[in-house]
Image (cartoon, rainbow, N blue to C red; front, side):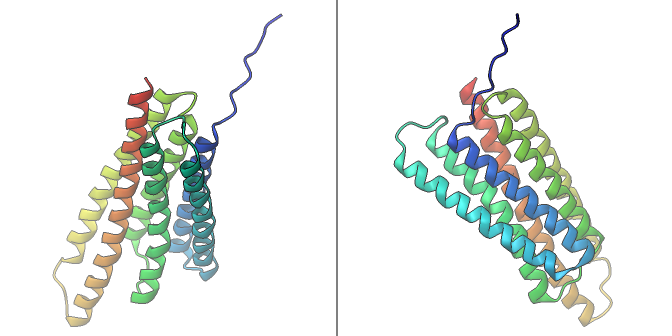
Amino acid sequence: MKLFRRKAKPDRFIHLLIQQAEFAVAGMQALQDYVKAHDETLAKRVSDVEKEADEVRRILIDELNRTFVTPIDREDIFALSLSIDDILDYANTTIEEMTLLHVQPNVYVERMVSLLTDAAREIYQGVTRLQDHPNVANDHAVRAKALENRMETVYREAIANLFNMPRDVEHVVEMLKLREIYRHLSNAADRGDNAANVIGDIVVKRL
């Protein structure tokens, strides 16, 4: 008769980080849907997800402040939580900036948001594998970093296209608005890269 090992229950900090990462994926997916459909209900969905994720982070920080022994370094838990939170914050503020500046999504915005969504999924997969399969977690972190590199390539292409012979003053104003949106999305990618780096650091310490 074979005996099967029962899968270990995720540590509460890992569980909370997984919840945060889930919300990050949901928020980025809603942002991706928004830039395709430009539907205000989708904009509200991003905002609602961001608020739910903030509550999870508040609980995590409270747990961290009340716990002496943690499964991974306290600094790493805090840093990973912050980076994941920043990803979702940037998703929300991207919509706010697009609304305030009256910017319509274009093909570059869609491509960048698509890459950010894929990176958020890799971060989520990495966090879910941290406890039982750290090497697999690191693989997902590496994939997230590769997506960030692709994101930067698209960002540079978008900027180059912006400055391709401006036609008039109105076009220059539109260029400046789009550049702000592109820069905002590039900063979001940096936060994803930070999250991937923290996952990598955690894996090195656990091995």
